[in-house]
Image (cartoon, rainbow, N blue to C red):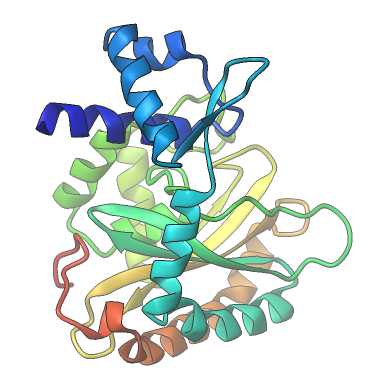
Length: 268
């Protein structure tokens, strides 16, 4: 039963990273399972409403059911109600995209955003994506609150990424990454220019639970590098850190953060 559940969840995760959908043989090959087993599990997931299949192309893709469950969970726990006004104010001041990510099960996932850019090129990815720790400023901000050993353990699970898909300044070695984490610890924030993607810049800072100082999430500002050179990012740092502090104080109003749950993060 455990093996069946593992396979079903692996299918969902694989489809989550493929918004255009996948053919049956691709899913089976990626997850190293027989196509007949993959077909049976996909049929069950369709029956339960988590997956749909295009009648013409026969491509499988996720429905919005999982996304809706996630949004319902966040809403009922007060996370979005608490965070959104703060994100909106910061986005208006910065004039760029502001995102909130939460640490859970040793992963960092973007759960809310506010778009401050009104004209020109807009960077506006969907929420719900897991941050790539080695290349994103959000990843660096979280990792900087851990020991070097803990940080590298988490990065080893994801890898440094494909340099062909990352920006020209992405850290591709352990030493390069540790240098950036040490700088982030010193400054209280992490910034990247053309690291996670070509032409993208971002700055991020940890959000710590006010009573215990445990890191519970990350707040970031991101946008086109042509509008956010390093000087502009550093100028936004005080506003970013003030908003993170506000989120820290407000987190006690959330059932999720106000309890005693451990979010895959050691006290720091």
